[in-house]
Length: 189
Image (cartoon, rainbow, N blue to C red; front, side, top):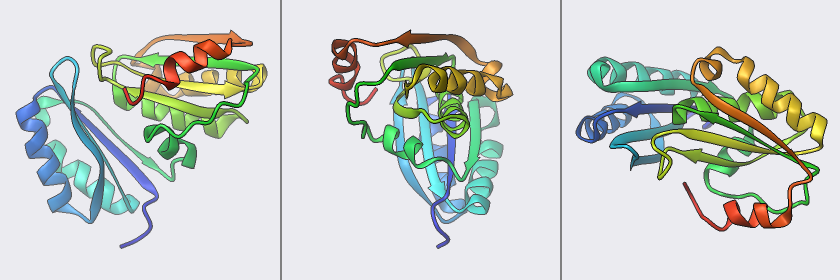
């Protein structure tokens, strides 16, 4: 199998159809699940990884199979490693100068925002919230120097896949350590 350097996601409005789409994804191409879970409000999210051609083929097939149920889908070729780390909640505290939040209507748009933002500036992605207990929305948290976090937010919202599904953004200079502890101790969202 070629190296896992692509990330694909499909968000569906039916849990039953989500399980069927997940089955189609892994039967179509040589891909591996990152996650396949039910989320709020009654949606199903599937994240896969694999070679870019395999992920594209799997997403295309599952989207054809589940077209009427697809809320959002995307493919990221060569996502930054920080995106993978944030998905599995690996984010050590580093007393950042600033914290920035990009909130989207879909989980898929949040993943795109994370990748675009971290590639545009010297900030770090420390959290990606994907629909669970947040009404189906997604969000990403960047940390670093104020200018870098601002640049990451701006880069994220410039991407049309994010801007079309943007809820809001926030830049918090000098976040208190207790704020960090609030979201980092909540576990995976």
